[in-house]
Length: 141
Image (cartoon, rainbow, N blue to C red):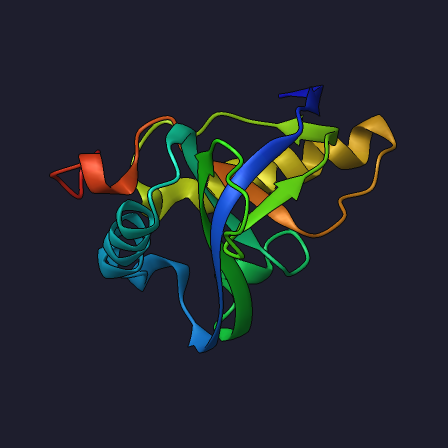
């Protein structure tokens, strides 16, 4: 766990509000749909995908209404309203290795670490994928 500066990035985004959201049952169809839309509009993908949760830290694990954004890092393209520029900011980072079913444990350790450093967690929560959800063929990964 560490603090680092999150660099400014252009993201091809789709924001949704999902009633009684359960992070463990997120459909890969959300991701596949975003990739298809990106291909149609032709911005060049330039980095990793992100899931952005517009709740307090751990809010996405509580089954209630949740606003979230699926996003792809892309090169800036004029005239595309699905691309937004996200400015840099200070973030607390953790790397989760293992099943998405156990990611809550990493979040809890991250929140404990944030609290011991004297910082305060602020929404939104960004998940940057090292391996895209579409590249994993097994629930064990």
